[in-house]
Image (cartoon, rainbow, N blue to C red; front, side, top):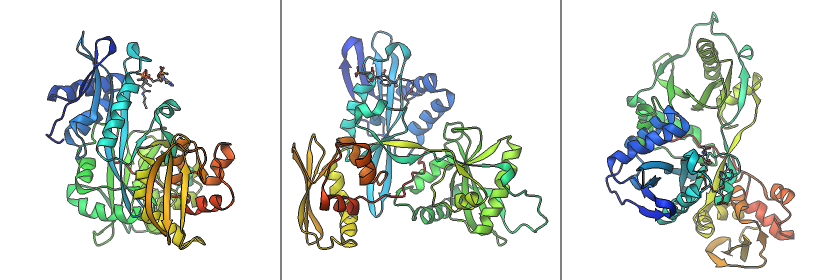
Length: 424
Ligand SMILES: CC(C)(COP(=O)(O)OP(=O)(O)OC[C@H]1O[C@@H](n2cnc3c(N)ncnc32)[C@H](O)[C@@H]1OP(=O)(O)O)[C@@H](O)C(=O)NCCC(=O)NCCS
């Protein structure tokens, strides 16, 4: 945790104060509060994140205190992630561990902390904010469903090969340690290269994952696959907690088909030993192990979705200029010269293309009509490639565009393969 503390302190109505972590004891008070709302493992996760996560900052941990009792009555956190959208690096602030004591609910305490959270996002140059939230609630604060979360691919154990094969073992397995971090980083980057939107994990984050998730809600085992020469050829992670009663595979490197067979056998044996009735693959569809499992009968039991908030539409589109220019160049619009107005009804953004280059992107305030018209919350699913222009038009009569603008919207905003592997 960084030492540069700039504490926040604002009086609210009714003898309440909205604060950020000011003194070391506040960390434990927030952890105990989160434990009370969500259980012990979330208390452990809060402690680990505050004390050990490389991206954690005291001022990103908000809470409301009742002055009369000194009790923490509501809290939420901002957790900083770095993502890559094709070749563009983006910063997203997760809104995490959101809770209010029963007797203080429906008094706007989360609403007021969200306002501070959004101030921090703007102040610190975040592009996006995401939350793995309860249904609907976060729409009130500008969030919309826009990226796959918790993939639900499942396979029954009877569909998997047994490990009691007569064939000699080609691969061996062992748990990863911090000494393996350079190799894990390489394998992770290689596997993620196939995704259009992905999480960036630096060395410090890898160390956090290996050293500081024990006893937390996010505890996971990291296993390595070794060839006959003891060279690491792959890895996978098993999450110890999560939705459902199955054994959860939460991440893998690229894996050759024979390595997938070995791993599927290992997973079956592990599931039997741990009394898990099935295996769940929390993995993107492009993942090698999931592909192998699908050939053996894995089926999709449905996913949940990250809810996303765009901090500033013009600034995000400006950052994505290299991507948008590439899409235009690869289309019949190559060399485009045009001012395109994306009207988000409460505000509009002008994109000036000159000879295929995006020379200017600026917010232009209220406009009655533009080339592409979208309710403000729908920009996130469109830009993040979660829903196509056609799907949005089909669902919402106030998504409007005509003729050539439709074609250009399809070129600029392609469907994407996005998946976020965790940073904690
Ligand atoms: C969900 C929860 C965090 C809301 O906290 P809160 O302090 O009551 O929230 P607020 O009062 O700031 O709510 C903002 C608005 O949403 C409304 N609201 C409260 N809970 C809601 C819910 N579950 N669904 C929809 N609206 C809700 C409030 O009435 C308020 O409306 P208003 O601004 O029009 O008056 C709280 O009920 C809680 O801790 N629940 C258990 C833990 C949990 O589910 N956390 C969320 C994990 S993502």
